Length: 490
Ligand code: NAD
Picture 1 (tube, rainbow, N blue to C red):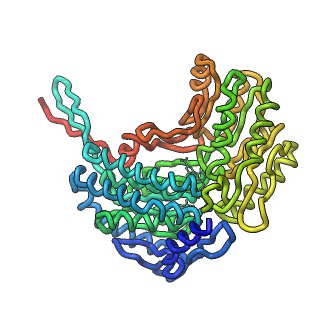
Picture 2 (picture 1 turned 180 degrees about the vertical axis):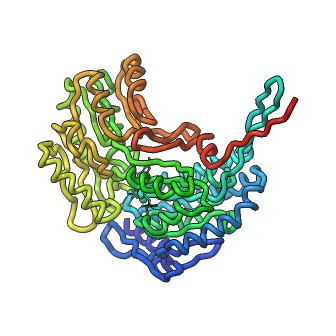
Picture 3 (picture 1 turned 90 degrees about the vertical axis):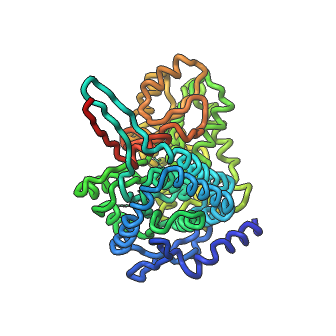
């Protein structure tokens, strides 16, 4: 651990001295106002670095840079863009340790997960790079009098606004397809986790991405974020964050008819029937809520268990929760690190009081861990009902709410009885039941007898308050490109 802390301190030393600057048209720049805000470590609340506090004027500059770079980048043949983006993937792999260590310090996420997230960032670039050469392809549609030829073209400069959970991986998931499609980008990272967005743009430019193609402006959502969503030269906004922020962005973008893509909150059920492989179900249910500190949009934060096995199953989950290793994010043995920020920690802790007041039982955790930093114990609430706040609201921490159900009908009613619909997990050995249930579950993504395993060509996104649009495969290109049709007489 000491060695890792020393390495991480070395990697982030320049941020402490020069600050996390904005990156516009290939240059490191301070905010035009000269203002900064502090990024703090959730490990001990020490200041990690001052961060450029960009505002509307900085966004305007970045958008101008993205607009100026658009022609060159969008007209570059897809095969050439592919070469550059593959080099970006290679450069990410070469600096994966630096990215992972920096992310651990900045977010509190455990190294065992962040090292994989950095590599997944490279995979995102590689995957979308390979689609770049064919991104403009369309169809020809012929009738007796006309030949119609469809094709796609990049929509223009786009804005990407990201949250603080696994920020590097999530940013690449949005930025890589935008660049592969031929768009230029202004990225506004989350204010709680600004460091690895800066690493990404530097790595990309060192690998050959031309200046101005990717620009980064730090700052607050209501200020820099807002201006980006309102800017007339920004043609689309890809946003990942809370559902209520999505509503605000939709309203802010209305005047300029912004195309929006939203990946929002979740309150995802894991539904366990008594005919399931219970050993695997315990492993998957606990992994999906207690890994990544539970700060994961697809976390299984509601455990729906058939009443015949409810007591025994939840007892096993409590046992696992109590054994989970909490510790410094840079310790390779750590599973749960500190939550991102004291404000978020206070939000998570507030649900412990609410749960007790509403009559749920604390079967594990339910309190802070240690006296320093934003550490919270992996928590399990039992005897919960679907009306309780702990069953309805996204807590976004290592907190699981277990609710019993009698049969398929009741399981569906509980699973669908929330405003969200991002992911659902189902455990049963009855194939007919799996088909009936997945037909009725209100979720954009469902996994049967499996934890969340991603395959990049598949669609990613939610229904209801969990999002609008899909990422992955060609769905990403459809968002970042316009489809046009040209008709010829025959
Ligand atoms: P958030 O909505 O508070 O902030 C996200 C980003 O939006 C930040 O960069 C913030 O500065 C910016 N922002 C805030 N107000 C804005 C405004 N008015 N205009 C423009 N930008 C604005 O979310 P968060 O707390 O950083 O992240 C956690 C949330 O993200 C959770 O709800 C989680 O479920 C969600 N999330 C969803 C997915 C998904 O794929 N569905 C993935 C990861 C996280």
